[in-house]
Length: 129
Image (cartoon, rainbow, N blue to C red; front, side, top):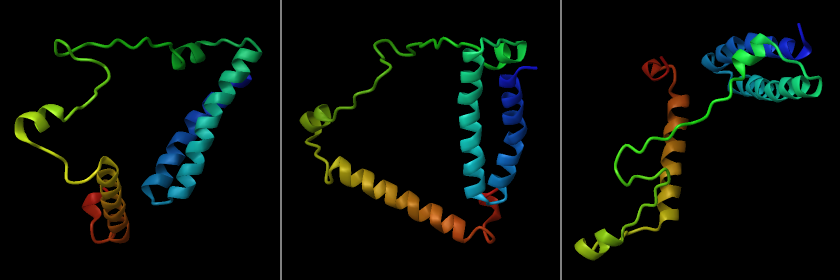
């Protein structure tokens, strides 16, 4: 077994530990394990390339995938560019706040809701199951 495979198997073995820490509310430990998992992916790829190590496990886990994009609607694009000029022209619409203000309000609302959920976890178990 190659060194790259050993690093990969260690990564696979650490995934349940990361999930256990996450579900138990140890978010910091889960984040550290997740960071290690991410780094180990780069490390095993580097080792495999440097020493020209190829294995069946590596081939199976590191398949090259070519994304295929399908336009569902005629004229649709992969990049959306919303524009309110038509609503402004036909309906006289104009936003009451700027995009920046709207995003700030949205982020603040989510932060408040997440904080509330964490503080009230014991009385709101349905949120965590």
